[in-house]
Length: 306
View: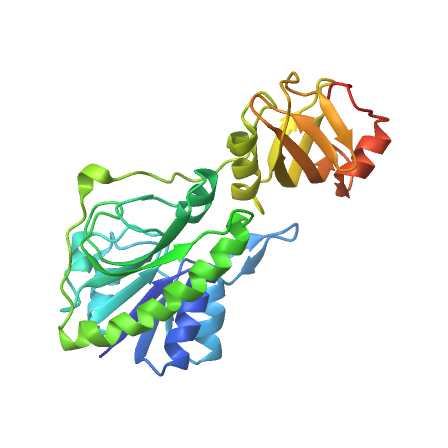
């Protein structure tokens, strides 16, 4: 079966590497154009392009598929199936119709839950106990196609979105490799999604990462885990200083006002409901440090307001 692979970032590169390790017949790779990065604005290849070139696979980088020439170039490759993993381009119907086995996509959630660009992060932000990966037959909608295969993944209560992302990537790559032979054989039955149960997972932003000590401890704990490693959850102290929190734990409180320091070793602060231990923080304009050192620098003591 002739496979055209489309993808751009690290998760896609890991999936492509897995396909090649399993000796799948990847005849071409599509990825976004090289982008200028860093101060020198040097053109940088995507992770997928680097993997493809290392394996001497032809790489195509069209700006899109609005031009008929780009569509015909793809059609000339005669793909039986197109595997799409975080390509970063919306595929028009004319492209979806090219491969006889269709276009399939790995989505890092149990569809129809968490459609969109941030499913791993939002699973953690929501405090979900599990997530998963879905192999979907693509249509013109946003993650709305029929599901060909899925696998559940439990989420550890202290796991960050970065840690979960690594596990989801490995599972997704494996499930893709397991699914493709069944697609070639025509033995898979696609299951329509229950669209009425759909939820969304929009892209994160630095502004969204803010929390308040008046929030519940559970919410803060989930926000810190879900915003790690990027953009990093943060709050503003009573003194007006921004503090990024990279790790925290839920603790007990006894009705103290939100923001009250309950202990300094480790730094424990009352919330709107419960309390949190601030284990690793990045104060505004300073280097990362543990919460106890942060408290010492501010000369905080139990009963103070943070």
